Length: 257
Length: 216
Image (cartoon, rainbow over all chains, first blue to last red; front, side):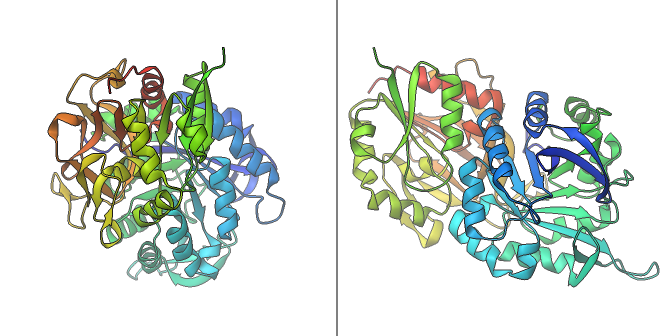
């Protein structure tokens, strides 16, 4: 018996609907976030991650209301991300029923925000999301940088160094998305996942690129991830959470069934 | 007849709505309140003592709101009490978090850091201990009613409790080392995991607590 590796379905929510884009464009509708969350809860998902992709542009009242509804019906951990920029944003989401918040661009603009957040609310509820993209040439040692704006803008910050810095600042968990792999269904970027997982003392969630169940296994075994996040393979019914867990268990991974 | 109340004690540390919603779900015959009011708490049938965040901040708020005397009084009255996560740790004698913090001392024992070099099966384990782990039930107890031995519960913590008295330990967990995750002494119980986030096992435990006829 050991700590189970977690399977986390991710809801990208825009204007109150679950959507899933390929490389953040070509967005497909995947349903009502409350209904989708309840379905994953019943299926035995270990957590749910809710990313508000409209947050940067529009009002957040709908999101707060949706989070409240999910939290009153789903009794597993809920992480909320997207547009978390201030201590007040964090308090609002925690009060609405989120257990953790995921901070992305606000950490890049002001790294001390992560310190302040962890100090105020505890590291256990501060997730730092990292969108990494490979920037090395093929004949070089692999190197990744942090990108913003859905993977379009480089910050010039080294992804592994950034992960170390963010955990030193109090992040309790890292949500790592490969912008090269996201939406491509070719599997996680295992190199960046294992590089970061081995570099930091806190759990790492692998994200971006899951197309089949073996990808989840690879993320844990080769990517050394503590949790695996996926969206479209679950949303569109290709696989269920129990199928994914059964497969992982058959491959020798400790899961909660 | 009015419904008996379960009060979730509010001292400003963390989100209590999840605990309250979970209780509403499993204890429809109780009135569930989130409160920091001494009278409301004192008149309740049973209380939940939760907590998240750093121990120093939690104890500071507990003392500021006088819960370090109210909670022991409630315990002494013989009514059921359930500590959750940092609430459990605050019920112990002392925590080594934040360079050492004295706690309420209702469950003799210490709260310790997992450490940086913890290993399990040769692999480094991550801290915080975050996620679903199995709990070994080492004694029969009404709180375990309808919950299987080695059932999974959701944990998130970097410090763990070690009771001085092994007789009060009714649940243990393994993560690099073995530690105490459920303590029960007369009408006082405490859990390190988050039952309100532990799906059906957690809801069952809260239901069991809501029906627990404890001996004081």
